[in-house]
Length: 109
Figure (cartoon, rainbow, N blue to C red):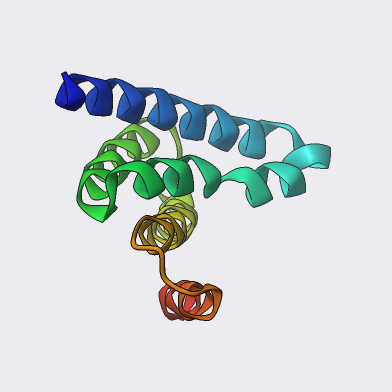
């Protein structure tokens, strides 16, 4: 039961990420807002289920992104997804805000 719910939520959050990403690509005057919102599906999913299922969701999102966009957009997907996964995993593990920030900064480096 829990694993089917986890897969369903993963598919829902992956679809939300793809919708935000398409919004980022095709709506130029609101792309800044979409760029800020891109990591949130990964943050929510990783905060519920930790980082291993979130990496599977990342692989699915990366594959879909490769299929529907240009290869130049791959680094954006990698940075936003891994940043969201790190923040979500830190929330799941209930670490301090400073350690959460440090994890995010290591991903961005």
